[in-house]
Length: 160
Image 1 (cartoon, rainbow, N blue to C red):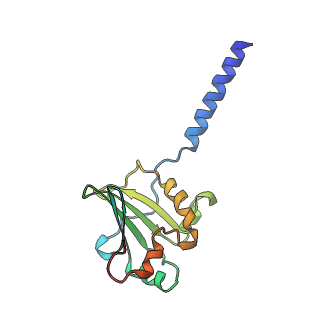
Image 2 (image 1 turned 120 degrees about the vertical axis):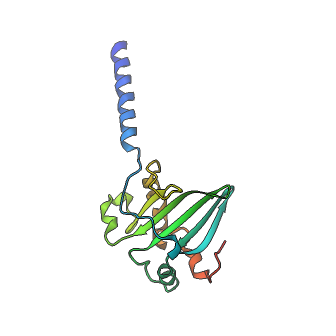
Image 3 (image 1 turned 90 degrees about the vertical axis):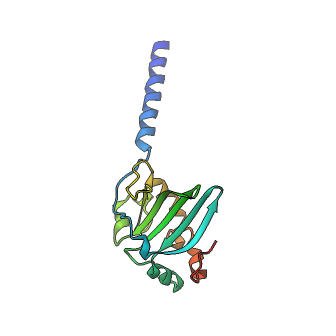
């Protein structure tokens, strides 16, 4: 009886490991492109310990939010993550018509897709974009933006 129980224990353990690996979200390529930063407006800064995040978007997105309109398709939001005064990475959200349909309902964030980029602006495939979607889903009432509430107060000087 003991050998069977031991074998079953190993089978259960192996099955659990396979399930965990199967559920593990990995980095993925998608439609997000790295935008021309010169065309974006720095509207807010968030500081967390030794991390400084400058967040920027298009002038059209700022006007849309200020006027209570949806953010237009084609819009980028970029978070520039600085550590010790140097760019550590970029986080880019891009909205595209119909892009949400490319994901299972459980991962969908409207028509937004997310991507991490290295300081040299190449895609960072070691980052987990599913985690981004999961977190931003909590902001469905504000265009999936954590800092969108700051935009109406933006008058040309980044809000802190």
